[in-house]
Length: 100
Length: 162
Image (cartoon, rainbow over all chains, first blue to last red; front, top):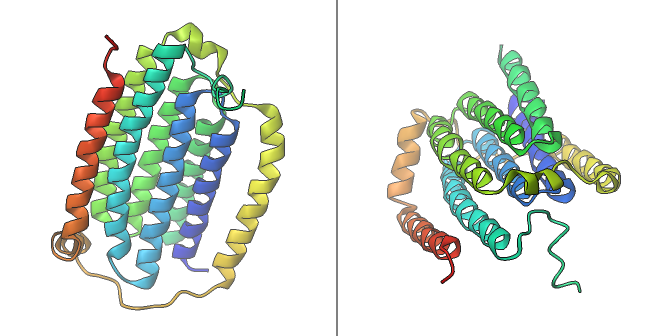
């Protein structure tokens, strides 16, 4: 097993634990933080595959993922703030308007 | 030596991930997220992606984390107290599924082979910068437009209703 494959395993672990955080966390802000975990895992996988394969395209793509992460955090936290101000919601179990 | 660095960085990252997932207080979770970001930046340095490591430090550890801390300070503390922690039932049902997914992915990675199209690039940041500003110039401009749109959207979402 080469070191890049070990790093790919770590990146898979990061992605899946971000998914677990999205599933189990109660707070909306912590949900967004878990998506950041997933994005970090994807970036790590891209960088390690880049070294494994020998190229730079993965790193360029990871830069675009960083830009998307920044904009996602801006819009997502804006949504959380708006939701809190309009409805007073802060937990992921309170948003049930589409279900009811 | 390489495996020593890998072991140190990966155990650091795994500890921080458990902090992000299971710490009750949101501020503590964000602090362990900062620690995770430092570990991932170290991994990028180890993998030879120096530009990505620097950008990881600048964008994540400074911009995004400060954003989270600002938002947490705007939300009243007693509201956050009601929704801290995690759902136990979802943890019990979700963990085996994700463990199975991890085992499947790990099997695919360990047994599979990767194609080798080139060799390791010398002077990585220079090559990445050159590729960004020549081959990937149009996606870079699109990314800047996306950032501008996100900024406008955040301002519109965050302003006070009249």
